Length: 174
Image 1 (cartoon, rainbow, N blue to C red):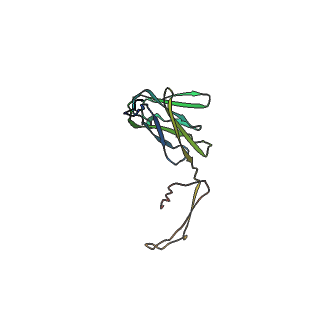
Image 2 (image 1 turned 90 degrees about the horizontal axis):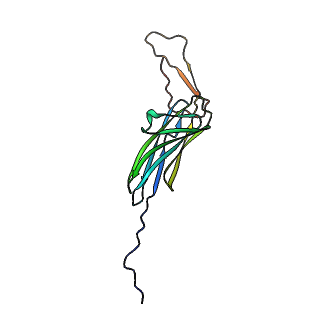
Image 3 (image 1 turned 30 degrees about the vertical axis):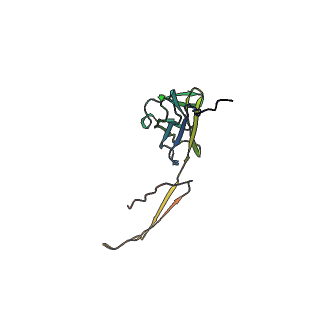
C-alpha cells in the first residue's frame, strides 16, 4: 500500500510582462510619448529588473517627456535605452514613459518602438507602431471682387490635401 498525497504542489516563480502604447499617428518634428506598462504577474518577487526600449531610426530620445533615469547607448545606427527598476514584487505593476522626437526629415512611413523587460533569463517584449503622416494642405478662397458696406459677403473655401493624411485642419477667417 502506498501513501496518497494530501496536498497539491504549488509552483512559485516570477513572470514579467510589458505593454507598449503610444500615438497612432505623428508628423515630422512631433514628440511621441509611449506608455510602457509593466508587471510581475508571478507570485514571488524578482531582483535586477530592467526595461529596454529601442529608439527608431529618424528619431531622437526625448528625456524631457520620459521617466527620469533612462540611459541610452548607441551601436552604429542603433540606439537602445535602458531603465533600471530594481526589485519587483510578485503582483506588482506600474507604468514608465519613453518619448522620442521625430526628425524633421524622417523618411519612414511608420516607426516602431520595441520594448523589453528582463531579469536574468526571465523576460518579455512588446512593441507599438506609429504612422508618420505628412499632410500637404492647400486652401483656396474665392469671393466677390467688391462688396457693399455692411452687406454680407460669401466666400467659397476649398481645402485639399495631397499628402498621405491630415489630422486637424483650421482655416482662419481673414
